[in-house]
Amino acid sequence: MDPALWAEIRRLHDRKGWPKKAIARHFGIDPKTVRRALAMEHYSPRKPPGRGSILDPFKPLIREILQKYPHLSAVRVREEIGASGYQGQITVVRDYLREIRPRFKEAFAKLQFRPGEAMQVDWTPVMTLPVDGTIRKVSAFLGTLCWSRLTYLEFTLSERLEILLECLKHAFEFFGGVPGEVWFDNPKTVVVARVGGAIRFHPRLLDFAAFYGFRPVACTPRRPNEKGIVESGCGYLKRNFLAGRTFRGFEDLRCQGIHWRDEVANRRIHRTTGRRPLEMFAEEKPHLLPLPAKPYDTRAVESVKATAQFRVLFEGNSYSVPPRFAGQVITLKASMTELWVYNGQEEVARHRRSYGRKKDIVDPAHLRELAELKRRVHRSALEERFRALGPEGAKYLEGLVAQRINAPSHMEKILRLADQYGQIEVLGALDRALQYGAFGFEYVQNILFERRRRRAQGPQLPLALPEHPDANLDCPPRDPAEYESPLEEDSHGEPT
Image (tube, rainbow, N blue to C red; front, side, top):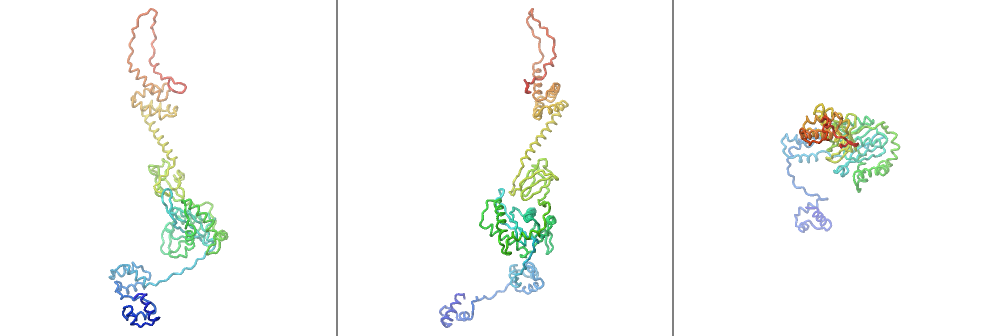
């Protein structure tokens, strides 16, 4: 019997006065159905006869287990009754546990804070945006003072520990002071381990907290009253700022967020306090701890080994360093926006931090340094080869370097002459050039050419001249070496 039939039977009997048998004949149903409908003051579907459950023989054992361990999980209950022969699915166990366990909603006391006592912080994912050619998740960091409800907002592209610490530092600088406590919602970057009330915070967070003088507090899991202030702020951010707005990129989102934070969120009349956060903050600020003289260095610190291509790797991107550090272990430090590389205390490289993927960020100065380094290595190799020619080569090299601006070019050309004419012949030419103080490829080449030309002509034969009474052919002999001097140079240093 469905609800419509039940309602019509009641109407015909109670309002029209039809007898039960007439109603049964009218609908073609059994008179017992009519009597059952009239007996129900309110409609209730008839339950089919129950079928036995595979769990029925184990229900007394389950009740006994729950008396000893009221909060035992369904998995553990299934293990316990499985040892006694239960072979059914865990879903049946879960359904039965929901029936017999008491259901209640826990009440939470509203927390009260004094001025300057605490700030609650949290991340909330908001959207994805293209950054450096890659789609990145954008998170909003919110830090809200628990008494005045003044809020600091900053959008970030990462939730790493150094980003969290930098956001906290920015929040303290925004407030102009430090609250006595900072409450966190148990992020893995903050809470390394937690067993009940025993909490182990990240050592770097504790160092940061000691520097600024606040006490870190990790909210109790499943206690919404302990983080309700900042979570309410996250909801307000999404409803009032993000909903219905468009952004041209991350920088546009950041700029619009700053304007909304300062001109809307912190100037509105707060629903809970009934006052504007900025007005209340004027009363709260004297209760904050003073900022230290110098800010904390929140940058991530890693020891990295530069590759043979003089690069260091960080978050999937590569950054150039001076080529002299290739293969060495150096220190990398990264902030939210920049990346530094140090050799000991010396800063050797600085780059804008990239949030792309597989990007190669290169400083042109490092490429110029590589070219200069290659030139020095090439020159050193040339000098070694030149000295290896012999004593004349070493001596000639000193004069060449002293007098020639582009000495490596002359060295290369003279070494090619050694390959062409042979080392012994070139050494002779170098010795001859040293006698005249002539340093340069052109001089050595001319000496070699002249000596080869003379050898090619061979010995001079006597000339047979006709007799003439007035001819006087007696000439004094001359030293042939006088004709081996290098060519004269003009005023510009070019051979004539």
